[in-house]
Image (cartoon, rainbow over all chains, first blue to last red; front, side, top):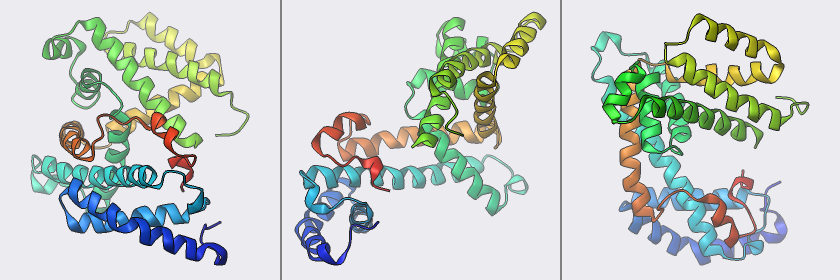
Length: 174
Length: 109
């Protein structure tokens, strides 16, 4: 249930008044954008207030709010960056081959999940996986491109796939 | 997924499935190797479940023309570094952060 009940509405309001200002300034400073800072500060409070926990139980509110705000900032920028990079990459295709708006939206969802999944991998492992799985390079070609052994290519492939599978497993267990 | 699933067994199967994936993806697997893989796959339900996961990920990676996916993911990773630097996140280390509060971020939904 919502943390906002009659009993603690005023506590919640106090919490908001005490922390909203500095959080928004902190975000504006870090993100260099007042509009995003305003939205993200708002979203951070919504997220905290909607949780089952009461704001009075938060022992270190500054650290807590900053951590939630950082997580939301990363999500927002991840989505935006993926969308921008995807539209940029699409330009390489002749326009008649562009997917429909609907197909683009689905692709963006998939790309967002893939990006989240792959962000936990080291750069060589990740690059090996992309070169093989997306670009169809042979293990020999990948070994040459990345200047690593063929055995490493094979190990990287197994590692990347295992990481992705476990990532999804953990996510679905939550 | 149902509660009847033994997650440790599934994790082990995922480990094995990933090795099979690396072997088969090399496109140099012999007929014998492919038969061995088939045998492994038929051994038990965890092997099949794990292989389903592998195929789902392969499906997601190839849902879009390959270079679009790889170019997008590569460039996204590059620009994320800048954001993480600005937010003061050297790397995403959520477990250690949980020391400072007693409400975990994943309980917020």
